[in-house]
Image (cartoon, rainbow, N blue to C red):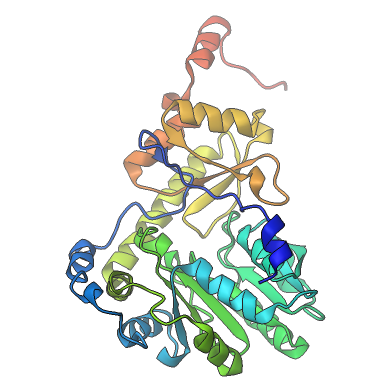
Length: 360
């Protein structure tokens, strides 16, 4: 890690509200957790009296079954971001460049800079058409945060092949892929996959995730991992969650259904991007509203939404998570959609002047 870069670099902004009085739609975390996970966490206390097993075989086997790879290729990490950092640290040296999508997760560029490298930004919509030649690393997020775009498997494989030919390491962040039924790229030659258990299983505070890599890079990634880098409760709950097929299936169905309902309702007022993720990106400019107004009015109604202008390339967008049906109703009202969403000021105006009519 580069000292000068670390000394000068600011933190990347993220979603999530610490206000207990707000319903949080700013963070893309499942509001549900698998049944029985709390008991598993509590039972792990006894194991926490000693160091976790090295290597953490049970966790690696569960992760391998979860994404479809060899357990030997699994590198446990305390969250998906730790997997991203480990991959970037091994792939990028001072003076290197890395292909980074934009808009996308801000930590990619930050991690590259921490190593003394420089991100070469490419539109997220065209990242798979970019030329990886001359870059130490290329990054793809699928589904992409904050747009929700999940990339075609064949196109991903073609890009991975071009990266191999160019000698460029490919990092694929699959933090939200578990919300879809799309297969992982885990185990693909020349590819490092980063997975987070934070989002799908609703456990951001436990900090559990893993990387998957093969060959010499996979061996280096495994050797660089600190011993006992996950706690006994994190290993136990992570392994348990990844084997909860019923919970995963139910979550996918709920997210798919609620996302469709949200998109249809929100499209009445906002520009809504297509999404395969547990969130939607909303353009507010065409609605004649500012991001500050949308975020502020939602907050006044007890709902936190994500100011997406902190993502590179976005200046008039907010991002909203997909939660439970009753919570969706509150979000729609807070964003001024439907009868329940009409503000007091708008209602008073309509009562006096009638609804606005478009020119014909």
